[in-house]
Length: 116
Image (tube, rainbow, N blue to C red; front, top):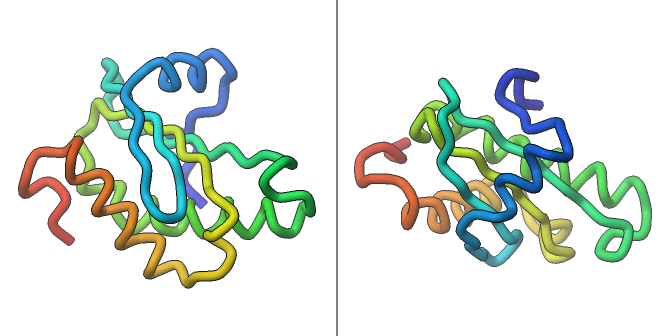
């Protein structure tokens, strides 16, 4: 789980980021917006429409959180991201989610900042 200062928690923060750029990978959709924060912030939203059972929602959230945890230090400090996991995320391992996440974010991050 990401540390609390690196998470988007408020509804207004999610709305702010959702008004930004959109990106999509195999396992999730992303909203990305640059702000004036001191470190990257990430929010993960799961819906009962996509994941009817709470165990599925929690697993999807954990997989996304683990993937972000491994690359958060390589993201620019002003980036804000809201991730919406897709149902297909439950069928893969965290390493697959991480590689997909890196591929999607390379469009938004300068070359060299995402080297891991």
